[in-house]
Amino acid sequence: MKEKVAVATLHGKAYFFIVNMLKEHNIPFISLVPGQATSSKVKLAITTSEEQNKVAFERVLVFHGQESELDDLLGEVRKQLRGKEAYEKVIVGIDPGEAIGLAVIADGKIIEEDNCYNSHELITSIKRSLKGINYQVTPVTVKIGNGTPIYHDLLEDLDYALPGRVILEVVSEAGTNYPLKENRHSRKIRHISSAIHIAGRMGSSVQRRRAIAANSPSQ
Image 1 (cartoon, one colour):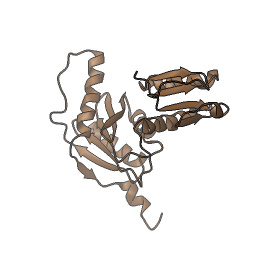
Image 2 (cartoon, helix red, strand yellow):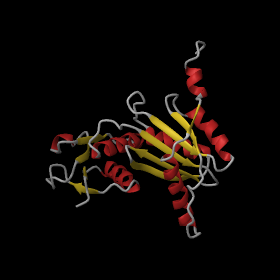
Image 3 (tube, rainbow, N blue to C red):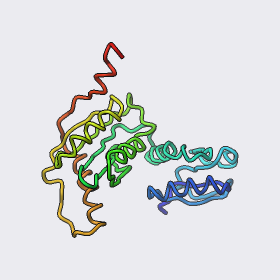
Image 4 (cartoon, one colour):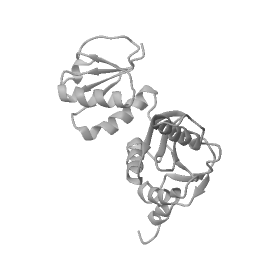
């Protein structure tokens, strides 16, 4: 049995939002009627505030029915499945190019991977993955490859958009791109694979202008 999450609700809209979120991020789950027993292998249940008192799991996450809650809910599901209150460290790898490969790795495990097609998509994906992170507890490093000139513009946008505590590094891309059979699907895999390799490399730190501005006496 792979399912470690139970979706325990009879509310159709809430069920739709929760299940779609879990499917999108490849998190196995089972569906339960509130009050229904299940295997001890299920680590936590997601339910609604109205049904919470009927769900007798040790770990229960409550969804209040708003689509805007889903990013926070996803972050909590991932942390609960790993048995942690907070990640020890998060590393974001970025492979710049026409398609921008993205990999977010928390404590050695990939929690998000994507192909983005502009700076806005990239920053939105990163912020979504980091939502709920306490930067005073969990250090976050964003590593970007230097294989194409576009990395300069992306680096500037990241510096402006991300919190000042986030560390930015530039990483050499030499040897991070591996030949694959050329088709649309393999190209998407290649960009993400390169982002993963970039995340695992040592880089050169970039001085954060946002951090400097935040510490300026004029601020």
